[in-house]
Image (cartoon, rainbow, N blue to C red):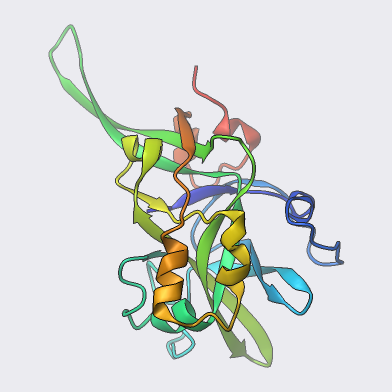
Length: 230
């Protein structure tokens, strides 16, 4: 799964993917992005990639209840084509979520030498591209009209972990290579086999290191969170 990640600021995204500067929200880099918050996304625009913002936690276009659905921030890539919440955006409305990397927790046990007591804890790790460049998660996008305005919400597709990321957790976000970005965002790519083939090109070239448990507090958000634990 992917429940926390680090998002770049607007300028870094514009530089990385050659997006023209705009007068949009000058969002800053965030070091502890949580579900239900507003995050930067890339989607198809008239002249290439368009930088927008969306709620991380997809609200299906057919959703009628006042409260958003729960636990719709991740979608399993193996199931997305057939699940009611995911199947429409899987075929017709996809996006990318720019990121510096993501966090995962691993359950660890230690034994107190004096008492023999077994202590259990969850150690957070930061996982990033081996070349330390920005990455993009494959996302699903919902576009709804709410009180005359466009409401965007999204989910991150996940897969079985591969490469070194599998040493930390059994699942990981789908990270697409840049060569697949155009087809992933293209609205005319609707064939299920084509979409699955794009997901099959997901990257596995990642490294990781331990970070401090300050990350566990949802309200913490500073650069120290992603520093290697000494």
